[in-house]
Length: 247
Ligand SMILES: [Zn+2]
Ligand SMILES: [Zn+2]
Image (cartoon, rainbow, N blue to C red; front, side):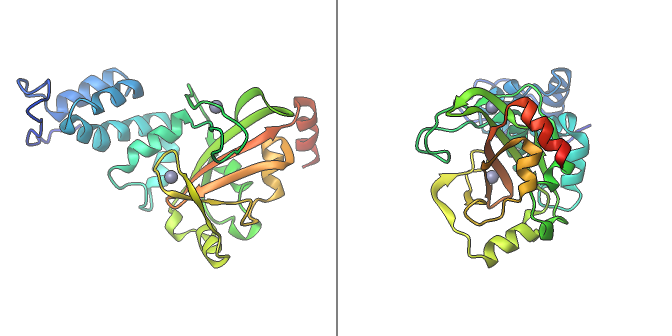
């Protein structure tokens, strides 16, 4: 429970200048609302003070409530415990970014959307790492299916996050291989530049098997802060069942 009171930073134009809302009150209200992300996003826009509380407290509680084990793991060695990253992680948990024409996936435009529930798995994440990088810890979501959107069927978008990306083998390998950052596209979650893992030749076959996707239709990007964003063309269900049996 938070009991600390903060100096009021409300701007003169803020609608709440007459009140003396403090963090404790906000905390209790949002706890009752089960850290509703739309409402957190809405109050963030009210003024700097709310934005600050949302970044430091509300998004953090949101992440901890929705994915407790994953958050505990990500936090246990640093890189994601820094204030300000909670909002990014919160968005990653609930937002499928889609793509736009001429963007990362050149020939498609699929609007981004909120996702009610997504499963992120560390075991799944292993499939997206080359064997020599498998000590890295990466969480990857199940693909969000966009039916009949591609030329040859269903498109799946998936997203993920590395634990302690700064010290990861994947990052080291990208740098050693002189992998190029995408010239203009940035991470939809944190706005950092992104590496193309396909170009860097760092997508293992196991990723395709895990997704149930066509071999040449899996592509993913990793940003400088360790967020992963991917797209694939999904095999029809019966085929993908065969694939996982073979594996
Ligand atoms: Zn989606
Ligand atoms: Zn990012």
